[in-house]
Length: 176
Ligand SMILES: CC(C)(COP(=O)(O)OP(=O)(O)OC[C@H]1O[C@@H](n2cnc3c(N)ncnc32)[C@H](O)[C@@H]1OP(=O)(O)O)[C@@H](O)C(=O)NCCC(=O)NCCS
Image (tube, rainbow, N blue to C red; front, side):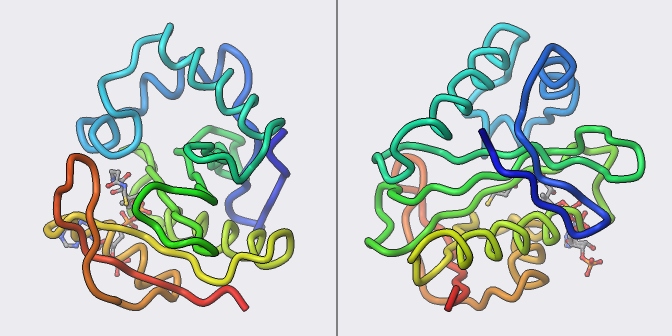
């Protein structure tokens, strides 16, 4: 199960239950569907996604394709505000490097919750794994995501390739 992490304002915790399934579907906009879900979600696909997340946490974290996923929760209300994930063996990312991704549901944007989630994931990576470097790959033109990376202490480091070989900006942060 995903470990519980908190900075006092947001919490990262396991996705679970019908409430999270409904919140994932309700919170998804076109950008999240494109960047994180891969396609618009239904209650069925969201439920299967949550099951898969639990399996990935229970399995080999370094298995290629495994995504270690948390729900981002607003501490004050407990509401699910988005999701955050780490891949320890991502395609097109060098060994020893963790690939991070995140999405914040539209009603919760504008509070820097994305940067807070990234900060918590980086702290967890440093404390729990030997991973040297965290990377965020951002499509040129995705200004909010670029800002999240910068706010979380990442610096621009060349280019990369994303889904279907699309050119991506690469941001990195040393973990130790
Ligand atoms: C990226 C995302 C998580 C950011 O949400 P958030 O953490 O709430 O971040 P904020 O809304 O606080 O915005 C972050 C910064 O981007 C800025 N920003 C937002 N929209 C912008 C725009 N269209 N152009 C320029 N800057 C913009 C904000 O002003 C803010 O900067 P500031 O804090 O210095 O004012 C959210 O937009 C999202 O879920 N996008 C879709 C999924 C996605 O793209 N994920 C990233 C994949 S790598």
